[in-house]
Length: 512
Length: 112
Image (cartoon, rainbow over all chains, first blue to last red; front, top):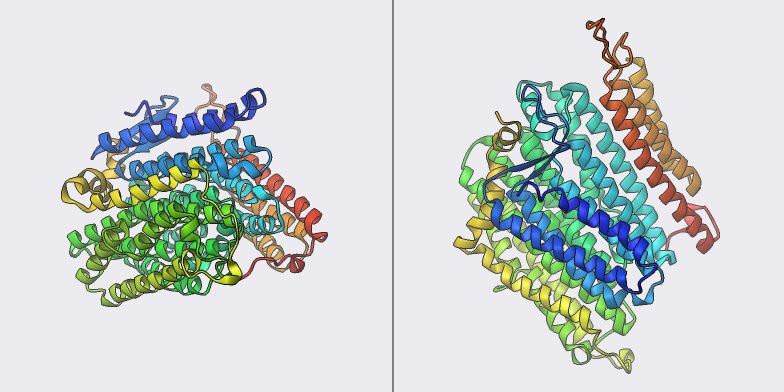
C-alpha cells in the first residue's frame, strides 16, 4: 500500500498541470481529465480505506531512512483516520466535478476552474497524508491559495469582497501556524509529528507548551471556522460557485481544519485537561451560536454556511468530550464512543452538506435566485432537486433512517454517559432548531406557492447535476449502515484506535 | 533576546496595520510585514552563537555550525508568501475596477 501513497498528491498535481496545457488543444478535455483524476483518487482511497485497517503505512520521500531512530526527510503517513478523510475528499470531489460539467458552463476560462480544483484536491490530500508539521503548512497553503482563487471565480462584487476577507483572515491564520512551527522547532529540533511526540514526552516547559497549543488552535481554528474565528466562512461559502461551496463546506474545513486539530492534539501533543476543556467549550459555542445565526437567514447558501459552523461544532464538541475523559483517565470506552461519534458525524456532514450546497446551486441555476422569499412551489418543477434536498434536510436535522440521526445519537449518548448532561441537552436542542430552520427552507423553496413568486419556464437541471445529487442522496442513506456493528469495525474503529492509543502513532512511525 | 523581541514587535506592527488601515493596499503591505516577521523569526532560531556555514570540513570536526533546516523552511515560506501576496494584489486590483475605490469602508455588500 505504501507505494500508492505519493499518488494521492502527485496525480491531482499532474492533472492540474496537464489540464492547463492540453485543454488549449482539445476542447472539453479539461473536464474529462479532472473527472478521471478524481475517479482514480476515489478508487485508490476506497481501496486504502478497506485495506488499511489497524496498520500505519509510512512512505519516506526520497528513501531517507531514519538515523539513530530519529526520522529525517519527509514522511507521508496513511492510517485509518487519514483514509476516512481521503475517501471524503475524493468522493465529494468527484461528484462536484461531475456537477460542474453543466453548472460551470456560464463561466469563461473553464480550464482554470478544473486546474485549480485539482490543485485544491492535491493540497488537501497532502495535508491529510503529511507526517511532518511543516509539510502540513505547505500543503495547507496550496489548498488555501487555490480555494481563494476559486471563491473569486465569478469575479463579481460579492465574490471579490468574500475572497478578500477570506484571504486576509487565512493569511493571519497561516502566520500563526508558521510561528507555532517555529516555536516547536526551537525547542524540539525536529518537525516530524511522531518525533515531536517522543521529544515532548521527555519533559517540557508547561507555559511554552501552552503557547504552542494556543497558537496552533487559533491558526487551525481560523481555517476550520470554529466560532470566534468564523467571520470569513458565511461570505466565502455563499459567494463561491456551488460545486466549490460544496467542496469548501463539505471537505476543506474538515481536511485542513478539524482533521489537523484532531491529529495534532491527539497524536502530537499529550492530551491535557485544560486544552480539552477549551476545545469542548469552543465546539459547544460553535454548535449553539452557529444555529442561532443560521435561523434568521434568507439567502439559502448563507443559511447552509452557518449550519456548517454549527455541525462542525458537534464534531469538535464530541472529540473534546473524548479528550476530556482521556485526560482524566476515566471511562475510556465512553471516550472512544464520543470520538467515534465525532468522526462519524464528520463523514455524514460531508455527504449531506455537499448535497445541500449542490441543491442550492441547482435552485440558483434554474430559478435564478438565492433568496428564499423570491421562490416557492419549486417541488412541481424540479422534482429530483426537491426530493434529494428533502433527504439531505432530514439527514442534517437528524431524522431516522438518514445518517445524521445515528451520528447525533451516538454523540448525545456519549455526552450522557460521560455525565455532561448540559452538553447532551444542548446538542438535542440545537438539533431541533436545525430541524426548524430546514423546515423553513423546504417550505419556502419547494412548497408554499406564492402568486408573486410564480415564474414561467423553470425546468429541472441538466443530467450531470442530477446524477451527482442523486448519488449523494443515496450515500446519505447508505452511510447510516456505518453505525452497524460489522461495518463500524472496519471503518471507524481503526480511526478511533489510532487517536485513542496514546503512543501507537509515534511508535509505529519512529519504529521504537 | 532583544532580537526576538524586535521580531515580535514587527509582528505587532503588521497586525496593527491590518486592523487599523482603511486602504486595501496598506492592508496588503501590513500582511507582508507580519509575514516577514515570521520569516525573520524562523531564520533567527536556526542561528547558533559563533556558528559557521554548515559545510562539513573533515579537517576540523569540532566547528559549530548554524542549523541549515530553518533556512530551507524560510525559503519555502517566502515562495508561498509570494504566491499569497500576488493573489491578494490581483484581488485588490479587481476590487478597484468593480468598486472604484481602495477604501475598505465602501466595500460592504455582504453582511448578516
